[in-house]
Length: 233
Image 1 (cartoon, rainbow, N blue to C red):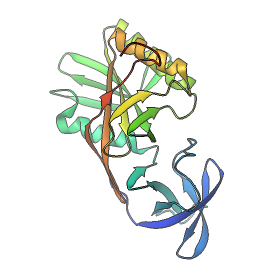
Image 2: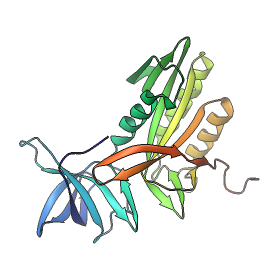
Image 3: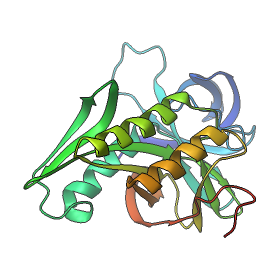
């Protein structure tokens, strides 16, 4: 996916999870942050960020913060991007051979998943998660406890029991990482649920992305490390 009208700024502060103060062309400006996650290790005063200008003149904020530089790495922060990235990747034939349909925001039981799909007689559900937390080449999800994420994994296992296929795809919003792991330090229950889902037959995918100032595109699979801390490798 691509963004129009992008330009650089300097991050100053984040008064709340929805907005940030940035220095744009010498002036302090309030911008919308397209990610309600913590992002504390990324949004540090003085770092370079990238904005896209809204085309809606009635908005309170004229710009969205969509990416941040972490050293030499550019990380996309747009929480809406992972679904669009997955859809483009799947529709290009990289997910299920012979994909007939891919429908967004589909309900099964008491869960609402990001996508349902069909391919001939096959049918399934996919939940997509964006990943922005990186440490020493390994990326982790979640960056904060997510009971909703655990519920989605339980729901995917229910799909399997009803004859559907099920997958969770972690879209890593950066390039060139080594491994994906559940963040057991932050939310061990999510890690346990992810390992249970994998054992039950839920497909676990992780894809890194080519990230530019004005674009993000799925690039390549990322190796998985799902084992819990202290377990045998």
